[in-house]
Length: 94
Ligand SMILES: [Zn+2]
Image (cartoon, rainbow, N blue to C red; front, side, top):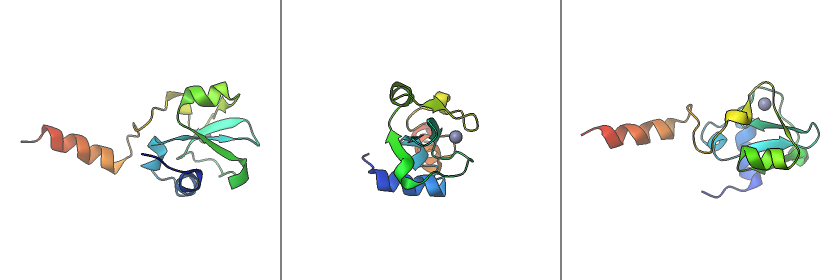
């Protein structure tokens, strides 16, 4: 799934649980990276860049947010995603 930055920023503003599994947001004004569902105040569009992994954020010099703890984040593994829940249930049912 390819998502451009505008789509990801929209997901950030809406705390979209599905898009939250696609990327992490690095905030250049604070040097912090967050999950898209972070409860903190949302940064401006021009201060956001999106990375596909925790390693990429750290390598770029960002630190993990104290509120949403993105260091445990994994792509596509958001437990709040309704799509992920329905997908796994149908595989085990007869
Ligand atoms: Zn955060």
